[in-house]
Structures are given as structure tokens and as C-alpha cells.
Length: 420
Image 1 (cartoon, rainbow, N blue to C red):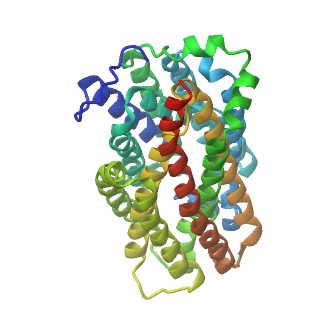
Image 2 (tube, rainbow, N blue to C red; image 1 turned 120 degrees about the vertical axis):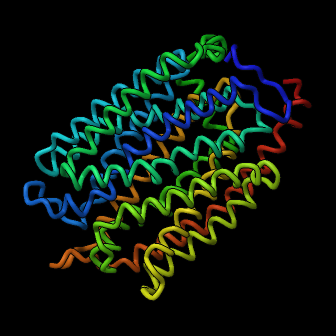
Image 3 (spheres, rainbow, N blue to C red; image 1 turned 30 degrees about the horizontal axis):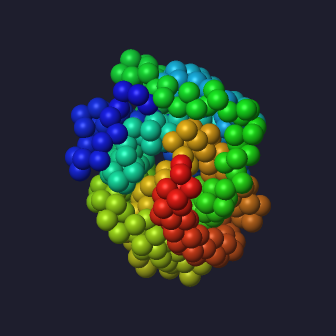
């Protein structure tokens, strides 16, 4: 990116702040599109016209992420060839169309098809947003930037998801789809009008022999392979349980379905606060140390709810703590992965990473749907099996992060010795 100054000053510039907060807004709209379907699950299950069993709700989530995984792979071949601003605009428009189609669904099959369309564009949009931030923000301030962008997830929980649930109460479960589609369209226009041209990466991309060769050169690096393995376990560990939380708390724990907006509101506030102080902690102590704390919390909470079946702790306490732990680990993870690629590789790497993220999320959702079964009263059974799988995956993540962070720290010294 030619227009954003890459200084080493402690304070970010006004242009850096503008880009980071704009990408946080894009991430808010994009994440809200993904998140809103999950809490609407109980309403979908209770709508006779949709015929969506609670045990099959993860398939709706998985269809989006599977499609996003496919375009993540395809995007690795061509995203580095385009101005990032223009590419982001196109992907956001496609995401808006796919989301609007979800509001027109007439059954499980058509809803899955609509989510596939949304996923085809949502995956590249996420990759481009993170690539833009990585282009604009120097490494030493990347934790600050990623904390703010990840705040888009928190704000989507604090404001977006409760608002969507209340819209669903007023106008039915279709209304949030149309509202979010409009919001994404506004984000697309704002990105096109407010972002500067983002073409600094094009000179290097045009000199490469081919996109396939460039992708091969990225994938053969040990730090990249380990980073993608880390991504796989990160997504598998949590998304085998996340799609089931709304149905679990409502039908298994007896939580009032009309208060799901409060659950997401409190969790979002906890996430928002956590991302703001976690970013500086990552910059100071490193990603691995922060991620260890987050992983212990995530694994412990999954054990309490899904394996041990503890019901004495209030639902809102456990769910809020889970959001907090997820946010803490998420900032550490995204900050570390942003440092893995070289500058000219960022969009291509983010595309591959997005493909792995969404592919692992889809695999987790599909696996969850295979393990779980639904009782006549909509309660889920075999949750303990899902919980054990989640805990094993979560325990592997800090080990991989330790190795990746060491390789990232060693790379500058190795590069200077080789004259690069």
C-alpha cells in the first residue's frame, strides 16, 4: 500500500486509525452475517415450513463455511492481482446478495443454498480485510490493530445479534437476513468511497511466474504449514460446540429463548472489553502466553457445560466467560498469523488461511451433526462426546502457537543474513 506510511512511531497515524476502524466496520457486518444464523436456530427448528431439526442446525453453518473454504482456495490464485479496495467492494456486494436470499428461503435446502452463496463471497471479504490491515499497520502495532478489528466480532455480539433477535421477534426470522444484507451493502459502498487505492502489492505479484508457483512457494514454508495446522485446530476446537449453544441452553438447560439476546449482549460486551486490553498484552508478552490463558479458559468451560454437565452455574455466567475466553485467544491467534506471510504474500496467504478456517469450521459443524441426535422435545444428546473432542483440539493449539511464534521471531535475523 503506497499511501499508508509505515512508521515505527509508537502512536498510529490518523490514516492508520481510519483504515483500521473502517475494516472493523467491515468485519462487524461480515461477522454479523455469519453469527446471526446460529441464535436464530431455535426459531428455524420451531417453524413447520422450514423443517430444520435441532441436530441438523450445524449443517446451515457448515454450508456457509464450506463455500467460503472453496473461494478461499480460489482466491489464493487471483486476489493478489487486484486492487484490494475494488476486490473488497465486489466481495461485499456478493455477500449482501447471498444474505438477502437467505431471507427468501422456503426450506432447509433453499436456506443451505443461500448460505452457500453468502459463503462464496464472505470468505474472500474476510481475507481482504485482514490483508488490508496487515498492509497498513507495522508489525509492532499489529496487536493494537487486530484487537480493534477483532472488536468487530464483539460489537456484532453486543449490538448486532441482539438487534437481529429482536427484529426476529417483531417480523419473524427472515427480517434479520434482509437487515444484515442492507448493512453489508452500506459497508461495501463505504469501503469503495473511503479507502485509498491499495495497489502496492501488485508490482511484486506481476513479477511472479504464476499464481500456482507463488502459492507453492508460500505453502512449502514450514512456518506457513504450521500456521495452517494451528488454524485447523483452532476452528475445529470451538466450532464443534458453538453452533449448538443456542439450542443447548434453550432446550437442554431450560434457558428462556426470548432472552437469547441478553446472552449475546453480555457475551459481546465481555468480548469487546477483552479485545481492547488483549491487543496491547499480545504486543507486550507475545501471542502464545496470552493464547495459553485463553485456551485453558475455553477448555475448562467446555468441560463444565458439555462433559461434566454442570447446571448449577447460571447460563449467563458460563456463556459470558466463554465469549471472553474466545476473544482473548482470537486476538492472540490473529496477531500471530498476520506476521506469518511476507508483505507481498498477504492476500494470498489470507485466502489460504480463510479456506482452512472455513473448511475446518464446516468439518466441525458436519462432525457435530453426525455425533449429536435430537430427542422428541428438541433436546440434544451425546454432548459429552462433542465436548471431549473440543477439549483435545483446544489443548493442541498452544503447542503449535509456541513453534509458530518462535519461527516468526527468528525469520528477520535469518533474512538479514541471507541478504533479503
